[in-house]
Image (cartoon, rainbow, N blue to C red; front, top):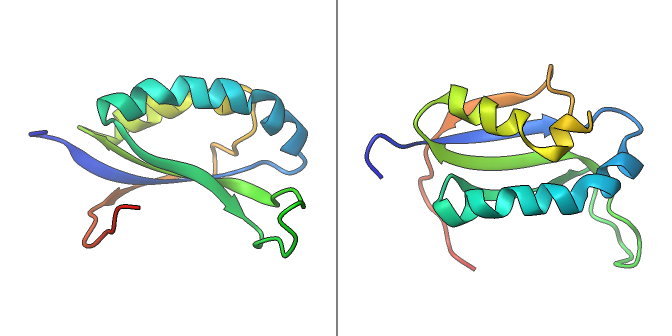
Length: 109
């Protein structure tokens, strides 16, 4: 899309919010589905303290990483503010970063 830019977003979780995160994850996924469908959101997922050795263990989630494709960083901040995890005060928005990004290589899977 002309005039579109990619942005790498890092959103650390506030301490002790895993329960709140899990309560709002369904709304977060529902909210982001249209952004994926329109191409505004390229990818999204949790950051982890480590990969669990036992797949039955819960994930030690520490935050989120997303890649947006949109016109400006301000548009990204607006989309983040509307996200249910932001509204539920899961993410530490004061420590969040929105960084201009350009993908050099990638392999679809």
